[in-house]
Amino acid sequence: MIELRHLKTLAALRGSGSLVDAAERLHLTQSALSHQLKSLEHLLDAELFIRKSKPLQFTPAGQRLLRLADDLLPRVEAAQRDLQRLVKGQAGRLHLAIECHSCYQWLMPTLDAFRLKWPEVEVDIPGGHHFAPLPALKRQELDLVITADPRPIEGVSYSPLFRYESLLAIPKDHAFAAKEFVEPGDLANETLITYPVERNLLDIFSHFLDPAGVEPAGIRTAELTILMMQLVASHRGVCALPSWAMTEYLERNYVAARRMGAEGTWGTLYAAYRSNQQELAFIQEFIQLAQQTSEQVLADIKPAVE
Image (cartoon, rainbow, N blue to C red; front, top):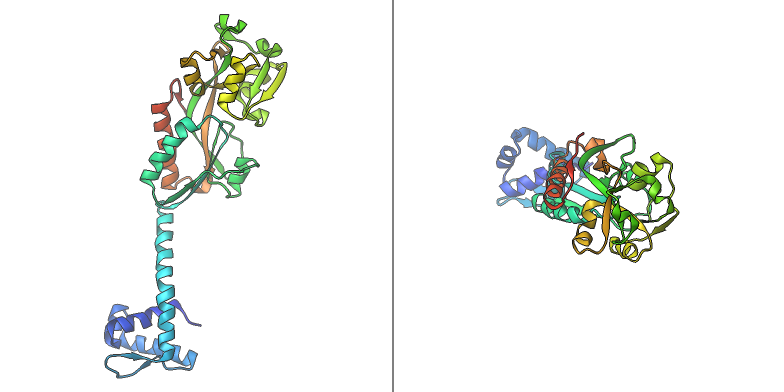
């Protein structure tokens, strides 16, 4: 069988022009090099070069193997370089999914900074995921998931990014505007507007209503934050969002907002990744950039504690 060492030997022989120089280039003795070439010629039942020719001449069989060497060896060397970068965490793939409809305010500048530092890492946010991101992460279809709902999954680890408060958006003239904060029971007669996601992914249920055993009078969904704000402003219901997602609407006096509970309703956002990639340098760099960027661009968040 033709081996990579055979192709490297022929390439070295062509480049040096003699057995002596080729052997030195390959860190072999001349005897070992001659034996290797004779074994290859015996295997192929063909001479590969003309002995004692000056300059060294290759036979048609030798020329064919040299064309193979010219095609194959550069690709093998490129693959080896890529593997070295992967092992050292200098290159790889970072396909993300976000279980947070309002995360783009801090995620986009994080990704911009990450691409500048890690140009050899393929970054993508694949669209059309109609399946649970965390199981997809375990299946290696994704490489990182931004989530506020960490679940115990074998082989998946979590790093907290930051803590955030969810506020209840209400019409400016709503009765809740006279309250310092709302309690779970206050929502029993309200229509709750949410993103079209699983109930357990919504903080208002998992951290506020469900623990108190309270159900809103109705639930309505909207895909976009701006649509939710329009519905709230037109008295179609109330909605809970991270405080940063409401900032521009509150500044424009478009809606009002109240805390949920006397101490507020707080959640933690996490970066989820496969445990066997935890030590990859670019994974850790993304987490650090996300923490730093969110602190710079978001108001009213708190550092997360592991």
